[in-house]
Amino acid sequence: MSREFLVATFRDEQSLLTGVRTVRARGFRIYDVYAPYPVHGLDEAMGLRRSRLPVAALLGGMAGLASAVALQVYTAVYDWPLNVGGKPENSTLAFVPITFELTVLFAGLTIVAAFLLRSRLFPGARALQFQAGATDDVFALALRRRDEAFDPNEAWRLLEESGACLIRYVRQRARA
Image (cartoon, rainbow, N blue to C red; front, side):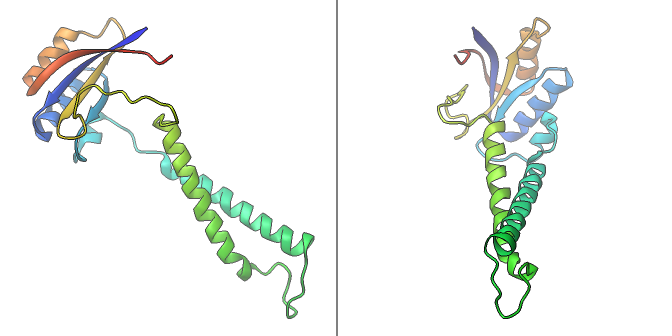
């Protein structure tokens, strides 16, 4: 089983943005866009929604906070209670540094795990490379042919009109 892509390369970021907006306005779904540096306004042009990584960070941080407090209360009150200078066993001020550190640790690890899972960058994953130098010095736009409603001739024409330098079909085998 293979997947078909229509890949267009552009000379500069303005023509890339024009191509993305033109193709999206005609109802084509963009598979991905490759650029050598971040292009301002590209995510809006592609119609990408906001990232949910902050939500993952919040949930990871809350799990770290809860586990830190639970660990410290258990060890200081139930498992190994010590009377140090007549202070209470569950002194919240003494818990602040460890709680902060575990909150930051859990939030950071959750962000890394969520990013790697969402972008499918797990060990052994093969990168899909459509165009040589796609992230070095070439701006590239990839459209994936998913169904029969995809009209490659119209897509080709739209990409030519928006300033594409090179347009070609790429066929890649699906992962086993």
